[in-house]
Image 1 (cartoon, rainbow, N blue to C red):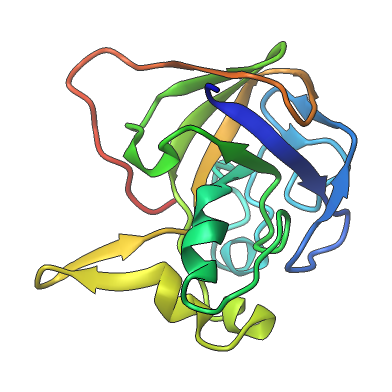
Image 2: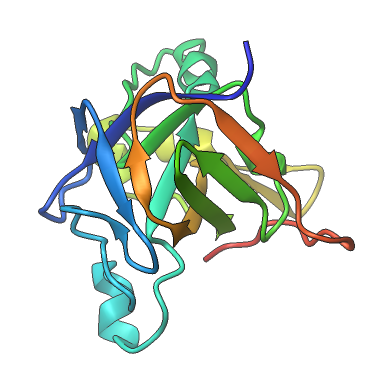
Length: 179
Protein backbone atom coordinates (compact mmCIF):
# COMPACT_ATOMS: atom_id res chain seq x y z
CA UNK A 1 0.00 0.00 0.00
CA UNK A 2 1.54 3.34 -1.05
CA UNK A 3 1.68 6.69 0.67
CA UNK A 4 -1.68 7.78 2.00
CA UNK A 5 -3.50 10.04 4.44
CA UNK A 6 -4.47 8.36 7.71
CA UNK A 7 -6.36 11.27 9.29
CA UNK A 8 -6.89 15.03 8.96
CA UNK A 9 -7.11 17.63 11.72
CA UNK A 10 -7.70 21.29 12.44
CA UNK A 11 -8.47 23.60 15.33
CA UNK A 12 -9.56 27.23 15.20
CA UNK A 13 -7.87 27.89 18.56
CA UNK A 14 -4.17 27.77 19.38
CA UNK A 15 -4.48 24.48 21.24
CA UNK A 16 -1.78 21.82 21.18
CA UNK A 17 -3.73 18.79 19.90
CA UNK A 18 -6.18 19.04 17.01
CA UNK A 19 -9.56 17.39 16.47
CA UNK A 20 -10.01 14.91 13.60
CA UNK A 21 -12.44 15.57 10.75
CA UNK A 22 -13.82 13.76 7.71
CA UNK A 23 -12.04 16.30 5.51
CA UNK A 24 -10.08 19.54 5.57
CA UNK A 25 -9.87 22.26 2.93
CA UNK A 26 -6.41 23.51 2.02
CA UNK A 27 -6.33 27.09 0.75
CA UNK A 28 -3.53 28.10 -1.62
CA UNK A 29 -1.04 30.42 0.05
CA UNK A 30 -2.86 30.28 3.38
CA UNK A 31 -3.11 26.79 4.89
CA UNK A 32 -5.94 24.78 6.43
CA UNK A 33 -9.30 26.54 6.35
CA UNK A 34 -10.58 26.96 9.90
CA UNK A 35 -7.19 26.28 11.54
CA UNK A 36 -5.50 28.77 13.87
CA UNK A 37 -2.30 28.62 11.77
CA UNK A 38 -4.04 29.59 8.50
CA UNK A 39 -2.63 32.77 6.99
CA UNK A 40 -0.13 34.19 4.51
CA UNK A 41 2.05 35.51 7.34
CA UNK A 42 3.18 33.62 10.46
CA UNK A 43 0.44 32.55 12.84
CA UNK A 44 2.50 30.65 15.42
CA UNK A 45 2.29 32.87 18.51
CA UNK A 46 6.01 32.99 19.36
CA UNK A 47 6.90 33.83 15.76
CA UNK A 48 4.23 36.54 15.57
CA UNK A 49 5.80 38.19 18.64
CA UNK A 50 9.21 38.23 16.91
CA UNK A 51 8.09 39.44 13.46
CA UNK A 52 4.44 39.26 12.37
CA UNK A 53 5.32 40.14 8.77
CA UNK A 54 7.39 37.03 8.00
CA UNK A 55 5.87 34.58 5.49
CA UNK A 56 4.04 31.58 6.88
CA UNK A 57 6.17 28.57 5.97
CA UNK A 58 4.21 26.48 8.49
CA UNK A 59 0.75 26.48 6.87
CA UNK A 60 0.36 22.69 7.03
CA UNK A 61 1.93 20.29 9.54
CA UNK A 62 2.33 16.62 8.52
CA UNK A 63 3.40 13.70 10.74
CA UNK A 64 3.94 10.07 9.76
CA UNK A 65 1.76 7.60 11.71
CA UNK A 66 4.76 5.26 11.96
CA UNK A 67 6.14 7.69 14.56
CA UNK A 68 3.26 6.81 16.88
CA UNK A 69 4.20 3.13 16.64
CA UNK A 70 7.86 3.94 17.35
CA UNK A 71 7.13 5.98 20.47
CA UNK A 72 4.62 3.38 21.68
CA UNK A 73 7.55 0.96 22.00
CA UNK A 74 8.92 3.40 24.61
CA UNK A 75 5.62 3.58 26.50
CA UNK A 76 4.12 6.71 24.92
CA UNK A 77 0.55 6.71 23.63
CA UNK A 78 0.03 9.28 20.87
CA UNK A 79 -3.00 9.32 18.59
CA UNK A 80 -3.39 11.11 15.25
CA UNK A 81 -3.82 14.85 15.85
CA UNK A 82 -2.22 14.54 19.28
CA UNK A 83 0.94 16.38 18.27
CA UNK A 84 -0.98 19.16 16.55
CA UNK A 85 -0.54 17.98 12.99
CA UNK A 86 -3.03 18.75 10.24
CA UNK A 87 -2.34 15.61 8.22
CA UNK A 88 -1.29 12.22 9.55
CA UNK A 89 0.36 10.13 6.83
CA UNK A 90 1.44 6.55 6.32
CA UNK A 91 3.87 4.92 3.90
CA UNK A 92 5.95 8.02 3.18
CA UNK A 93 9.34 9.04 4.61
CA UNK A 94 8.39 12.65 5.35
CA UNK A 95 11.63 13.36 7.22
CA UNK A 96 13.69 12.14 4.26
CA UNK A 97 12.10 14.54 1.77
CA UNK A 98 14.10 17.49 0.47
CA UNK A 99 13.07 21.13 0.70
CA UNK A 100 10.65 21.87 -2.14
CA UNK A 101 9.22 18.35 -2.48
CA UNK A 102 5.62 18.59 -3.66
CA UNK A 103 2.95 16.34 -2.19
CA UNK A 104 -0.17 15.95 -4.29
CA UNK A 105 -3.11 14.86 -2.16
CA UNK A 106 -6.32 14.76 -4.16
CA UNK A 107 -6.52 18.12 -5.92
CA UNK A 108 -4.36 19.83 -3.28
CA UNK A 109 -0.60 20.33 -3.49
CA UNK A 110 1.62 20.94 -0.48
CA UNK A 111 5.22 22.11 -0.92
CA UNK A 112 7.48 20.94 1.92
CA UNK A 113 9.36 23.84 3.54
CA UNK A 114 11.17 22.22 6.49
CA UNK A 115 11.12 20.40 9.78
CA UNK A 116 8.91 21.12 12.74
CA UNK A 117 10.95 21.93 15.82
CA UNK A 118 9.44 19.98 18.71
CA UNK A 119 8.89 22.27 21.70
CA UNK A 120 8.53 21.59 25.40
CA UNK A 121 4.73 21.86 25.07
CA UNK A 122 4.93 18.25 23.91
CA UNK A 123 5.74 17.25 27.49
CA UNK A 124 2.30 18.66 28.41
CA UNK A 125 0.87 15.82 26.36
CA UNK A 126 3.14 13.21 27.97
CA UNK A 127 6.15 13.86 30.18
CA UNK A 128 9.41 12.89 28.49
CA UNK A 129 7.98 12.79 24.96
CA UNK A 130 9.94 15.87 23.83
CA UNK A 131 13.24 14.08 24.50
CA UNK A 132 12.02 11.14 22.44
CA UNK A 133 11.21 13.42 19.50
CA UNK A 134 14.43 15.47 19.65
CA UNK A 135 17.59 13.50 20.26
CA UNK A 136 21.28 13.60 19.58
CA UNK A 137 22.67 11.11 17.11
CA UNK A 138 26.36 10.63 16.48
CA UNK A 139 28.00 13.54 18.27
CA UNK A 140 26.47 16.97 17.76
CA UNK A 141 23.85 16.08 15.15
CA UNK A 142 20.26 16.52 16.36
CA UNK A 143 17.44 14.39 14.99
CA UNK A 144 13.97 15.96 15.01
CA UNK A 145 11.09 13.54 14.51
CA UNK A 146 7.95 15.67 14.95
CA UNK A 147 7.07 15.93 11.27
CA UNK A 148 7.42 18.42 8.46
CA UNK A 149 5.87 21.75 7.59
CA UNK A 150 4.65 22.96 4.23
CA UNK A 151 2.79 25.61 2.31
CA UNK A 152 -0.31 25.09 0.20
CA UNK A 153 0.63 25.47 -3.47
CA UNK A 154 -2.79 24.44 -4.81
CA UNK A 155 -6.12 24.45 -3.00
CA UNK A 156 -8.12 21.28 -2.50
CA UNK A 157 -9.96 18.99 -0.11
CA UNK A 158 -7.97 16.35 1.78
CA UNK A 159 -9.64 13.26 3.24
CA UNK A 160 -8.45 10.17 5.09
CA UNK A 161 -7.36 7.36 2.74
CA UNK A 162 -6.37 9.80 -0.01
CA UNK A 163 -3.19 8.79 -1.82
CA UNK A 164 -0.10 10.98 -1.69
CA UNK A 165 2.10 11.44 -4.75
CA UNK A 166 5.59 12.88 -4.26
CA UNK A 167 7.34 15.04 -6.85
CA UNK A 168 10.94 15.86 -6.02
CA UNK A 169 12.43 19.25 -6.90
CA UNK A 170 15.33 19.54 -9.35
CA UNK A 171 18.74 18.53 -8.01
CA UNK A 172 20.66 19.36 -5.96
CA UNK A 173 18.26 18.39 -3.18
CA UNK A 174 18.52 20.43 -0.01
CA UNK A 175 17.96 18.62 3.30
CA UNK A 176 15.16 19.80 5.55
CA UNK A 177 16.05 22.31 8.25
CA UNK A 178 13.91 24.00 10.91
CA UNK A 179 11.21 26.42 9.81
